[in-house]
Image (cartoon, rainbow, N blue to C red; front, side, top):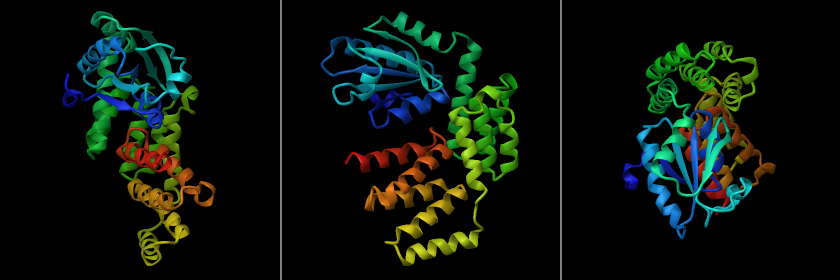
Length: 295
């Protein structure tokens, strides 16, 4: 299968592993294929697992890690031989296998991960569609899909978090808080829920438009003043303008990576958490941050 045809498969790195695998698996299962160019069985397994994952049309994602170039997480997971495949769900490894299995066994492995039921796959696909709609700015459609999922699974954490974010996108903090009241007690500290709560907390400090305009004017007058730029980024974040906040924080970091003892980086990571791990601003922002840190 050509790279152009792979819509649910991506190459990743040690620097992107947390975002591409751990955080992404909070909303849908993620399969990690540890491989290397010199590995013959890897070349056999690769096209098979890609085919099976792509056939699920977004219900599961595949992340490929070249262990010749990226060894950190392979080491942490105890990978001693390749190909090694791990399935992640809700931020943790839940299953795996070693070696090049035939397609029938790979398909059984993926089906087991998806609970092997039509309902489970339909829920996963619906969540994927809602996420895509939200990222494309169609908040009304995303709201409708998340609400439909909650009709089927009232305690689905991904749907609760997604619906709350839709309310935030519409500026309705009260409704977002009401939605979070649906979270079961045992899941209140789930990372995706904590991210939404952080976004709500940021909104409490949202400045009036006139104050935001004044802060921007001050930065334009003194572009080298990191303190003013940081204050502007904080105000943008509070107003829900995450992309603007990220852009200004990265300007500070590009000038001085350890500014104020890592103050800008810490704020940037909080914004990623508030925005959500699968949002474009988080994915692209993490990539830009990694390029600065590992340049």
